Amino acid sequence: MLFPTLEFGIFFFLLFPLYWLTKGNRSFRKALLILSSYVFYGFWDIRFVPLLFLSSFINWLTGLGGRRKAVLILGLTANLGLLFFFKYTDFLIRSLNNLLLGGGNAPLLKPLGIILPVGISFFTFQGISYIVDVYRGDTERRDSFADILLYISFFPQLVAGPILRSDVFLPQIDRTPDPHSVDIGFSLRKIFGGLFKKIVIANYLASLLVDPVFLRPGDYGSWELLFAAYAYGIQIFCDFSAYSDIAIGVANLLGFHFPENFNKPYRSTSLQEFWRRWHISLSSWLRDYLYIPLGGSRKGKILTYRNLFLTMFLGGIWHGAGWNFVLWGTIHGLWLIGERLLVNGRKPGMIGRFLGGVVTFHVVTAAWIFFRASDFTLAGEYFAGLAALRPGFSLVTPFLLILILIGMSLHFIPEEWEKLCERSLNRFSAPAAAITAGAAFLVLQILAPEGMAPFIYFQF
Image (cartoon, rainbow, N blue to C red; front, side):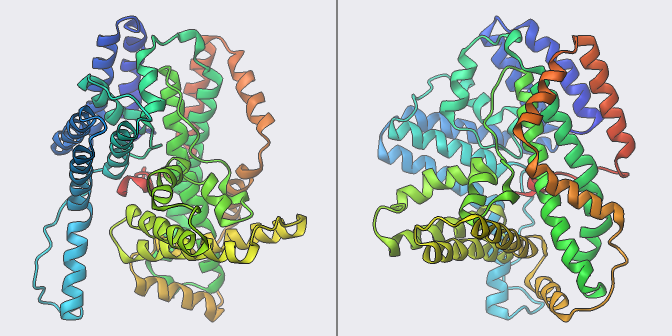
């Protein structure tokens, strides 16, 4: 079920009043949210509903083991085993065939054709964070299976994040929600800002520029290739941050508060800063459950560089079963090491920050080419086309340039303007807010291109 669709509108229209009518009954409220979340997930493919249930059961059972290391290891093995089977089995079979046969047409092993369950990377990492936090003593174990079912399956963030920590989410289900504490203006800004980024900016950039250029990069001029790379950077930001924004806004309407997942990442002046602003729930997860356990920056420069590289390398693998994702993570890991070697603790001045911002944006953009290209051959063709300085600019229209500029300008909107927008929306009465929301959704549907592509991060 996609957020910007009629199906989700009907789903939430039915859930919202029923949820608030039963807010005083904790057991019924949990059951309603669990059932709704499973309906939301099953709408995509009902065959994978048992997998979501199994993931919840494994993590609940592991949590009951408390701080026993053997139980933790079993839980981690089960979580990572499920993720590995569904996400990486066919990738490894294909890679093994290519290695042994040099890409021949008679594979030794036949890929299994495994369908990747949507959201498996997100709910697996969420479950791992719970059992590790219980083991560390950072969060209390939950004896109630319903609590873990809801924590793993809560529908706003189920299929594309943000990745929630148990100490953020679980205490919220214990409290009776107060409808008077819901910030309607905040929710509307998040939801409709996200819808605009997804429906208008991301979809038009994808359909009119990014998809055709990345499909056959050899057919286009160097300027088209350059602007398609810029457009993809804006597309993936608008697409992914849109999902997070809508998830945060929808959860807020139900009385749940999620942390921000994006904080104007393209205004970063270094790659280290970029990862503090981009996909914050993943970058903080990698820091707390991988980088710091490896030793972080506590054991000297060489081991710090190793830990940085391994963290980003594995972060690349998390994103997808393909060597292009491995290379994408490797680029980020090596550049983070290079930044540390170059800066060496010095704080840059104004000119240095400006140049750092320009360089960081282009490093991120260049790495996105590997992320977006279907294979190394296509990525190599793309970079060769950029270097060839071929003429051609037919696809890059003023409309698309305006969308790219709007996408970049979103990174420089003052926070005061966002708060002013929320305060203005909060002055509306409930009927006026509903009419405004309906009118805004209708306008967005008129502005949207035909069709609705799934969110990019559904594939991860």
